[in-house]
Length: 270
Image (cartoon, rainbow, N blue to C red; front, side, top):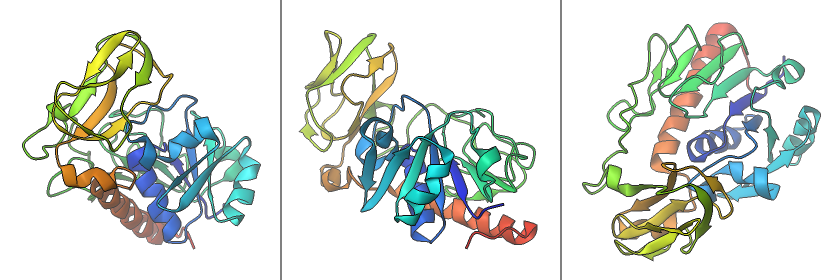
């Protein structure tokens, strides 16, 4: 068994976990699908799937082709990312822990027997059946709390309120087609302004604020898919490229769970 921690997912919340563990001196590997659909792309390591590498807050994540290459990238002080939706690499790498940070609101195949320590984020998991700890991802008093017996709060389908705005902060595709953005992440936009197009159908800003995230150009979007996120707080413009407060809080909960479970199970990460 190695001291590696494998993280399933590299979206913006998973990237917060990856960055936190990396900064704490833990060797990490990210696993992703072939077409990740992150909205907050500039704060998500999953963009390395498309571009070969992605740097967030000074930390570089680099795509690799085989599990064996992970150690070369780690030795260079970077985070390796492998396209491996089923986590087939676990048999070869024998990690100390697995963190499911896909945030699919359901279990996409993670089991408690996949690593000595298994931690999962958000609804869809029950500890200790599916994993050894679940991390609460719902904003509120318990955000980031490790749960060792039970489940996280169920998904409401409504984003957390910011300045009184919830569901209105998120835009979904009005049609199926290829995404083409007009505005860039970090732009200040006005309600009703065109953010981009899906095929020939315009996507309008649902409120005035800062464009916090938008799907990358060329993505084949089904109707109804989440494709953009606006923050009504204009002062958040400079934070569009950094890890969010929510991601940092969740990452702290993951770190706590790893250390607690590691001590209980005799698993070392350093």
